[in-house]
Length: 258
Picture 1 (cartoon, one colour):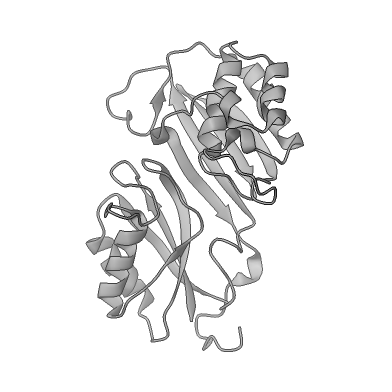
Picture 2 (picture 1 turned 120 degrees about the horizontal axis):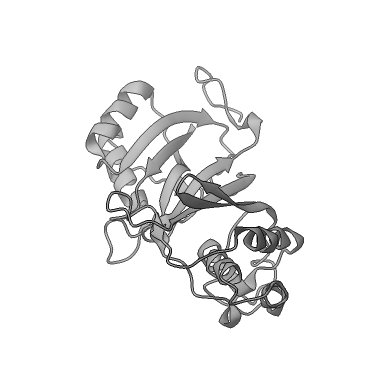
C-alpha cells in the first residue's frame, strides 16, 4: 500500500531535502532512516520536490510503500520523538497506488519573507533587506510573470531541452505584513533556484536598478546571465502543495486494485 507523509521542517542545518553524496544531513535521509527503524524494513521515500540547502517547508509531502499493518498514530508519535526538533510529521495517510508525490501534484506555493528590521530571533527565517523598495512596481513586475511560461532566465542551469523549462505561474504577488514583506508565488512546477532568482531580480526592479521593460527583456532573453543574484535561502518556505481530491483511499480498504 502507498502512503503519503506530510512534514514541516526548518532547513537551516540541512543540505536540502534530497540525499546527496558525501553529505549526510538531508531531510529525506533522516526521514528514511527513522521510518526504516520503526517499521523494521528498508523504506524509500519520494518527495514532492527538492528544496535547496537552507530552505524551509511549512508543508512537504512524500510517498512510500509499506504492505504490513500500521498503527498510524503510534507511528507518527514515535517518529516525532526520534526526529530532530527541526522536523515535524503532521500526518501519514493511505493513497491510491498509482499516486506519486511529485508527479501527481497540481501546484506548489512558495513564500519568501524579508524585513527592514534587524531581529536576532528571526534572522534565520527572515532576510534582512537594506534597500528601500517600491512595493507597487514590484507587484507590477510579479504580475508580468503570469504571461510567460519559459523561465530559463531564472534557472540555476541553462536548460536546452525546451520541455524542461516550461512552468505555468498561477499567481505571484508581494504583501506587507506588520514589519516584514512576503512574496507568494504559485506554479505547477519550478526550475532549480528559480524562485530565489526571480525574487532577486524583482527586488532590483523595486530598488529602481532595473526597469519594467528591462525585466521583461530578461525573461524573454531566456539566459540566466542577465538575471540578478539570488536572494539568500533562509527566507524561503515551501508553504503549500495541492493534489487532486480523489487521491486518498479508505484507511480500512486493503489497497488492492487502486
